[in-house]
Image (tube, rainbow, N blue to C red; front, side, top):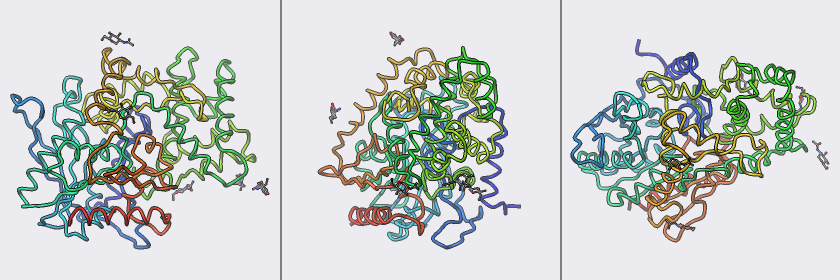
Length: 503
Ligand SMILES: *[C@@H]1O[C@H](CO)[C@@H](O)[C@H](O)[C@H]1NC(C)=O
Ligand SMILES: *[C@@H]1O[C@H](CO)[C@@H](O)[C@H](O)[C@H]1NC(C)=O
Ligand SMILES: *[C@@H]1O[C@H](CO)[C@@H](O)[C@H](O)[C@H]1NC(C)=O
Ligand SMILES: *[C@@H]1O[C@H](CO)[C@@H](O)[C@H](O)[C@H]1NC(C)=O
Ligand SMILES: *[C@@H]1O[C@H](CO)[C@@H](O)[C@H](O)[C@H]1NC(C)=O
C-alpha cells in the first residue's frame, strides 16, 4: 500500500462523487466541480512524461486559526490545512492562495509559480481556504455555522498565516499567487495588508462584484465566434437549437421528444418553470464550461473533459450531416454525459436545491457547491443570467432564477435586496475596479468570460497582461509545446515582475 498513484486517487475521488445520490450541477455559477482552478495535467509536461506518485507530494500540515477575526472576544479556533514544498528554508516565501475547492498538493510540485520559486530558491506554501477541502472551521455548514465564511475572514486567515510563517522562516520577502476567486483575494490582500506582501500575481480575477453578470454569456458568444472550422456560425446554430426547444416545450409529444433526445433524468413538467429554466441553463452550461477552460493545460476530475474544446463543440454544432441544430445540440449534450460518466441529464430544480441544502461535511454539496453558492449570495452575486441580448441561449434563465436560489437554499432573508446590498458592500470594501495599490499584476485571457469583471488594461501603478486566445488561469498551468506565443510571453513578463519585486 501507499503506492496508489495520484491519478488513481483522483479517479477514486471522482467515483465517490459521481456515485453520491445528489444532484449538484457539473458547472454551477461558473464553478466546475473541484473549484475554478483545475489541477495541472499530470503527464503533459513539454514532452516529459512525469508519473507523479503520492510520495512526491508534500503531506498536509495544519495551522491554528481563529474562527472569527472580527470578534476579539471570540477565542474559538480551528485547524487550517496547508502544504509546503520547494525550498526547506528561505528568506523568500511564495504563497498560493486556496480558493473555492479542495487545495490540491499537485500545485505544490507543478505549475508556473513553482518554476518562479525554483529560480528564487523560495519556500512554497499553499493555504487552503476556510470551509473548503479539509479546512473545516465548524461542525457543519448550517446557516449558523457558515456565517464565518467570507473573503474578509479568508484575508485575515492569510494575514495571520503569512505573519507567522515570516517569523518562523525569518523571511524578508513574500509573493502571493491566486487564480480566479483567489486571484481576487491576492489583489485584495495587497490592499488590506500591504506590509505583509511584496508582490501579488492576480490571475483571472473578477474584481467587480455584480449581481447580474450578464456579460458572461456575451463573452461566451464572442469566444464561440472565434471558431473558424466551417463557414457556419456556431452561435446561430445554438440559437436555432434553443428556439426549437421553446417550440417543442408546450406539447406533450414535444416534451417527450426532448426527454429522449437530451436523455433527461425526468419527465418535463411544463408547470415547473424553475425546472425549465434549469434545463436551459444546464444545456448552456455544456458550452460555458468548455469556453471557460478552452485548451487550458489542466486535468481536473482526473483528466476528463480536458480535450473538449470550442472546436469540438462548434464542429458538432455546425456539421449539417449530423442532423438539424436541435439534434446537434443534443449531440453535444450526449458527448458531455459520456465524458463525465453521467447516465442522464439532471434538471429538477427541487432535487438540486435539496442537494445544496445538505449541511454535512460528508455530502456532495460540501465539495464546494454549497459554500460557493453561499459566497455568491452574501458577497459577490456573479450570476450568469441569460438577460443579455448578445448571447445565443435565449432568455430562459433570467436573474430572478438565480437570486431565488439564495432564498430556496439558505434563508428567505436572502432576497434580491439583500444580495444587492451584499454586493455593494463588497465593492465598497475593496474598491472594485478602482484599484490603487502597486506591486500587483493582473493577468487575464480574452477567451475567459471572467475577464469581463477584471482589470485588463494597465493602471498607472500596476500592470495588466491581457492574453489573446487563452482561457481561465491559463498562465498558471505548466507550459506545453502548444502554448500560443502570447501565453509564453505572459509567463516571462510575470517572471520579470517577480524578479523586480524581490530586488
Ligand atoms: C467558405 O466560404 C468561402 C467564401 O464564401 C469559400 O471560398 C470557402 O470554400 C468556404 N469554406 C467552406 C469550408 O465551406
Ligand atoms: C478525449 O479523450 C478521450 C480519452 O483519451 C477519448 O476517448 C475521447 O474520444 C476524446 N474526445 C474528443 C472529443 O476528442
Ligand atoms: C460531420 O460529421 C460527419 C458524420 O459524423 C463526419 O463524417 C464529418 O467528418 C463531419 N464533418 C466535419 C467538417 O467535421
Ligand atoms: C427583501 O426582504 C426585506 C426584509 O427582509 C424587505 O424589506 C424587502 O422589501 C425585500 N425585497 C424584495 C425585493 O422582496
Ligand atoms: C469606481 O469607479 C467607477 C468608474 O470607473 C465609479 O463609477 C465608481 O463609483 C467608483 N467606485 C468607488 C467606490 O469609488
